[in-house]
Length: 438
Image 1 (spheres, helix red, strand yellow):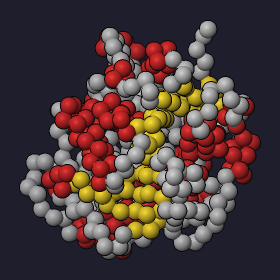
Image 2 (cartoon, rainbow, N blue to C red):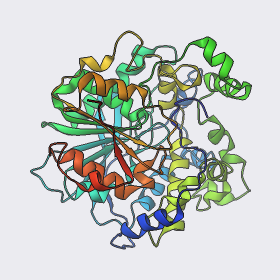
Image 3 (cartoon, rainbow, N blue to C red):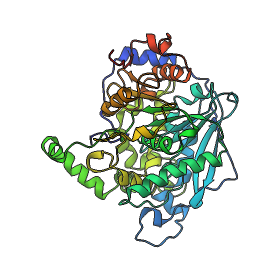
């Protein structure tokens, strides 16, 4: 795996099965057969043009018939999302929020949540979309107003062109789209900003620029914090096959294989119209091979059905025309390191964030993301406004692998209790808090 690169295709693991079953038994759901996602039926899906996927071609509308054949239809992604939202307790409203540049941000917000609480905004990782929070939405929305959106260029949001060679332009486009979104949804109060992986990097950049809107910044396995090692060290320690992958990712986007393999599956003429058989696409079985962990990330009593829905959702998320992954390439260098990391050799960009904003880092103990930068930030800011939590026996997607422990940690962080108070997280042996030496 490329060092520090956020990915949905992680190494398989053999976690403690007894602990895993115990987690699943505790995570109960109110079984329903209908989807919990209510949508604005009058909204039109953003149009996809060839200019998005290939800047060398003139822009023209692609008929839905051809899009379905290529397995990149936004309608198929919308259907996959609806299946993901089945069997939830709360109801959620999905709608397109329009921002500058004739772009739209797909947004899902909770209904019937307490109105007098601090809102929570969730930003997903690279290669994902807002549906990735499906294990946590009911818990968080029962206590707070909850907002989730697909990052510009990802999921169901608009897919504008990014200049792969212009880091500043890509960074600005991502950050300003988040601020435009906040204005459009009329979020006029401070909120908790939660980001995962690449989303944590964007959440940090947003807080650096618009910190007056942030009550707490919660970073889950954040990408882009550590500086890139010396080139000579990389060349000495990096296997040739990783160098080859790194070279390819500079030429192709990370999900090119899924896009190209989409129409190469078993012949099935139905895919030209409805495509009820998602297994017709070779890319979906490939995703199951590359990311076997997803089959274990489903709530009790619906494991196979829920994991299949998750696979289908992520597959359709990542076969849409390239856009956000091109923007990510503009921010990332070889081997997946950020070109402009948050913590650098001679200074830390985090210094521009007010000490009044509490920053929480949460990692899985088996993640590939290095937390050295978080340790440096903790020493720099102190434990009064910064903390690091480790959830054991979990990797990059710990909020799905260990939802009970993640919810305990989130309850502690959002409670505003002093750090010496006893909480569920503080007495849970599967959760570690980093303590500064005296």
